[in-house]
Image: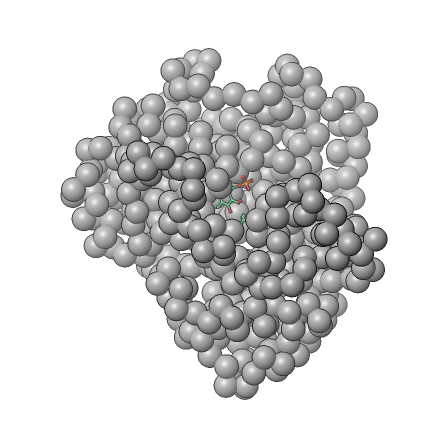
Length: 424
Ligand SMILES: Cc1ncc(COP(=O)(O)O)c(C=O)c1O
Ligand SMILES: N[C@H](C=O)CCC(=O)O
């Protein structure tokens, strides 16, 4: 059955034919392809096409698809049962692995998705501080949590619906919006509401509206204002955790948040989330504390096995290799665009990068919005024709994996530069 046939079938029984909106190709146009299998850096579609994958299942596949060590760890766990509903040894291994790798985390609770991780972090911050308001940055996406689906990035932004229907105005009223990288704006918010703010939640490198890097001193500024007002600083490292460094952006930038949310890489490709931080805050969680949080499948042994296997394969050398690969792609595309006279800004950090057509520099969400998204859509389809799968939205980030070896990178550069020539 072709992707076209499968999509027609899917639309009859799945809303929009997809289980997560951005997969529907609405902003770039066309029919989404269906994936039959994936190996290393390559996706094989239902139409028998092999595509170099720069989405990496939206971040988790840092070791490429179907990694043999992860597969073996899952198979071993599978032979012992799929879920116990009691504590299991792998959950302890996982908690120790996280605490060892992320210095700001003294205790960690596993859950089933990044959405659960940010939702529970917010509840915990409110329970700990006894305050209700939270600050969120315009264009940041923290999963589909009611109070965080306000001016949200990712699929919400892609579909032009950054404020979701179904979120009561009274919930959204507790969310204060702030432009990222604007020093004065966050200071003013704290001057006005400081004593009511439970937490500031931020993607430290916002990566659900393309990719924005912090201006020098911005993340320390967030740390300072939150500390001054007794509010918590929550780093949403669902995308960046264990991907941009072992300790995520907080390690790269030398910042200690109070709480951090994780997902993606920590699940090794299985559905997982986690949140952790200072013990004094984490101990507010049930059963020790008054903040309720739970999950039938939390700490699932298959997911723990996959995540642990993924974490064990990460080290400094791996991160250096990914940084080199990211730089190589970004520089090759910048050089070709300059040659062709196409204004193109590429923001890159390690194995993550995003393209903004029509811009020299992108430092804010306003810059993102001013980029030429139609040009991105044309480039997306040209890249597909050349055999490379990019995220199907100008607001998503591209991901690399260790399976993107030199041969794959050379092929990808040749395909992507050809795609640039086609849209020049
Ligand atoms: C930064 C960030 N936070 C939270 C989430 C939510 O994670 P999930 O999709 O696993 O619920 C995502 C991705 O969706 C994300 O990129
Ligand atoms: N940007 C989102 C998560 O990081 C993309 C995943 C999805 O919405 O399916």
